[in-house]
Image (cartoon, rainbow, N blue to C red; front, side, top):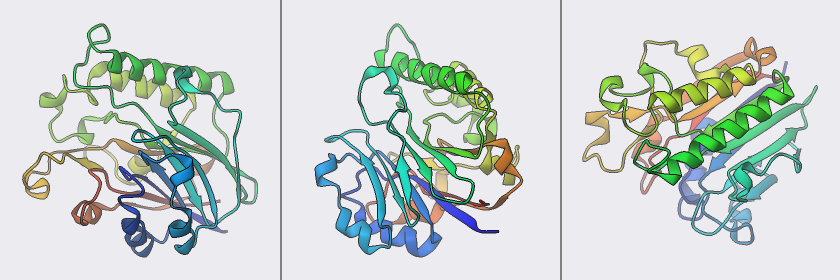
Length: 268
């Protein structure tokens, strides 16, 4: 049975970090790469550089300086043009595709709003936007029913489990791990009956992180991370999960993102 190697990465500017994509391809040999926070208008996306890495099939949805998603693939796919525009903002936080594999595969690449610094809907419009975004995505999933031959991945900007953060107690009132955000993300996961592909391989209470702040003097020594980047698969794909990696080494690449690539390999 053929397998698919798929990576999600918040690259934090695709033009600035294009050379690091070559390192990712060398280390992880992905078939599909889903990027978030590309920070690049579609007209300026570095298609030539990506083509040279062996990804002839691409879709981009970007804007100047902020947000942005992209799908880079060795396999043909079609863009899902009718998926929602979350919160009616047109801010390039979701890109859906149907991959041309036997039986088809629906792929959703998300960049959930970070939510600012104050975990209060009334005091912080960014936090309200984050909760509204997840509520809309949850309702959309619920209306569609349990996912079938589908993957949902990206920078979801929430670390839901106690073992997804370096200190559950100290981060309870820090945006990304507050109880209201965790409950919202868990509701979204239930709405699509999604299976957490990374926790399939690394069950709690083992710690696992995908993000470490730029503010840390020595991120590796302090290891104060959070698991903000996720890959979910539909229940019918869960038994076909074969391999995984959170590519921690990427956090030491020159001028790297504060997120690291996350890979899953599965039968398709």
